[in-house]
Image (cartoon, helix red, strand yellow):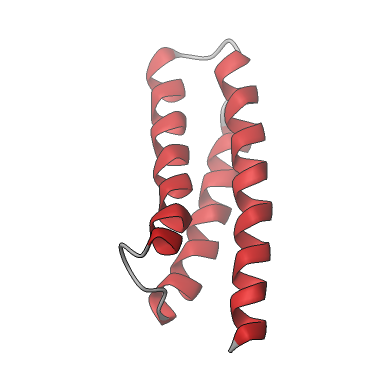
Amino acid sequence: MALLRLFVIAFNVVVVTYLVYRLFIVIQEPIIRWKKILVVLAGLILLFSPVSMFIGTFRPGMQYFLLYPVAILIFLYLIREVK
């Protein structure tokens, strides 16, 4: 169980770092205002998810392990298509 928790923490650190980096890039790009707002709001929701897990707002279950990586992939696709 400790190994699984270590992997979850490492995954979240990498994801949060990359999301913050991409959010700063999107904020600086000259794109339509509503697209920028949509991307920033989606990124903030994805950033608050692991933080609330570590604070103890909700316990990570199978849904988290299955849905969070899919949400990250969809968000990265959304960022790639924003231009």
